[in-house]
Image (tube, rainbow, N blue to C red):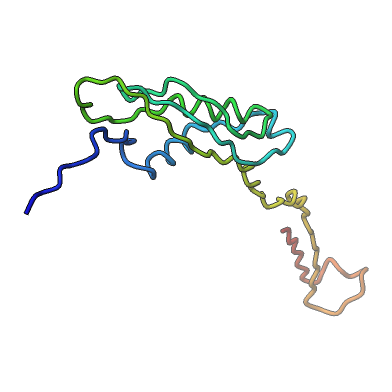
Length: 152
C-alpha cells in the first residue's frame, strides 16, 4: 500500500487567532467616517487584497463600496492586517489574494431617560393656636395659649 504524498506545496496564510480574532480587530479599529455618519450611510464594503511572502498586506482594491469615506476606512483597516505564513518551499516569493467584506452599521443611539427638572422646594408653614379655656379674646392674657409652627 502506497501512501499519498501531501499535494499542497504552498499553505495559505493564516490570521493569528482565526476569523474571530480578525472580526474583533476590525471592530476595535473601525472608525466610522464623519461624512457617512452625517449622511446616515450603512452598507458593506468588499475589499480585495494581496499578501506578500512575509505576511504583510501590500495592495488593496475596493471591489464594491458605499462611498462617503467608508471605502477608504475599510482599506486602511485591511492594510493593518498581519498574517502568518509557513516556510515556503524552495524560498519562493509568492503573493496570496484574498477578499474581505467589512460591514458599516450606524451606531445605535443610546436613549437617555429624560430627567425632570428638580421640583422647586416649597415650604409649607402652618400656624396653630390652641387655648385651654374658652374665653373671649379680650381676656386672652389670663388663659393658657400655645402656638406651634410647622415647616416642611
